[in-house]
Image (tube, rainbow, N blue to C red; front, side):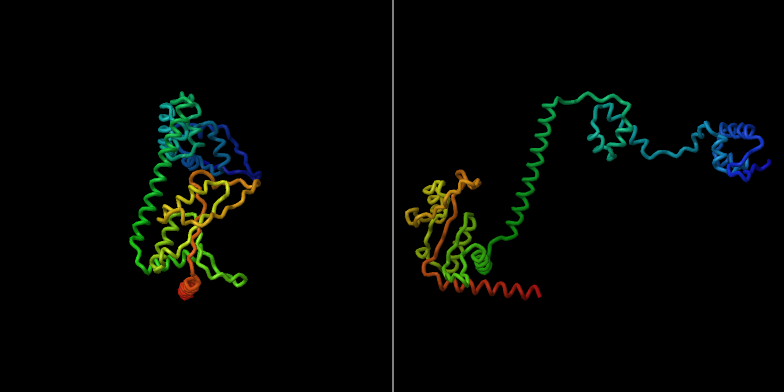
Length: 292
C-alpha cells in the first residue's frame, strides 16, 4: 500500500483524499481504532487522520470506563427518591457541582417537609448537637477533676501562695502596705483561700469580712450569701463598700446572681504578708531554674 506524505505546505495535499476518506470511514465502521487506521493507511499526520474519520464515532471498545459512572447512576437514583444535593453529597462523598451536572435533567423532588417542619428538624438537630457538646465538656471536666484527687498539705500550701499573689493585695515600692487582704467574687476561690489560711493556722477570730458591691445591688442579700459561705453571722461583717453608679456604663453584673466581691482582711497580718512574699519568691526562683 502506497504511503501518503504531506507536501511542503505543512497540512499537505493528497491526490485522492476522498478515496482515502472512504477507506478510513470503512475501517472506522469496521471497529478499528485511530491507531489501527493510521497503521493501515500509513497516515501519520494526526490532523489529516482526524479529518479522514470526522463524524464517525469511535468504536465502543476504545472508550475508557468512567470511574464516576457508578456514582452518577446512584446520584440519579437518590434524586428520584427525593434526596437533596446536600444529602446526596454526604451519602456519596462527591461535589455538589458534579451532582448538579448528573441530575439537572431530572425534575426537582417534592419537598419532604414543610418549612415549619424543616425548621423544627433543624432545631432538634442543633439541640442534640449542643447536648452532645455539653456532655463532652462535662466529661472533660470530670476527668480533670479525678486527675487532681485529694491534695496534700504541700500542694494546698503552694496553691494558696500562688492564689494570694494573683488575687491578694501586694505592697508596692511607692505604697508600702504589708497587709493580707484578699478580694474575689468566686465562691470556690474564697473556699480554697480559707482552706489555705486554716492550713497556715490562722485563727478565724483574726478574719474580718466586708462586701464590695455596686450601690444598686441588694446589699443585705449579698452579705447573707457570703456569711453563709464562710460560716459566720452576717452581723460581724464590716460596713459594705459601695461602687458608685456611672450612668454612661452598661452593667452586665446584674440580677440575683450578682453578689459583689468578698473582702477578707487578716488582723495583724504584716508578718504573714512578709512570709507570703518570701514564699512566692521561692516559687519563682525554682521556676527560673527549670527554665534555664
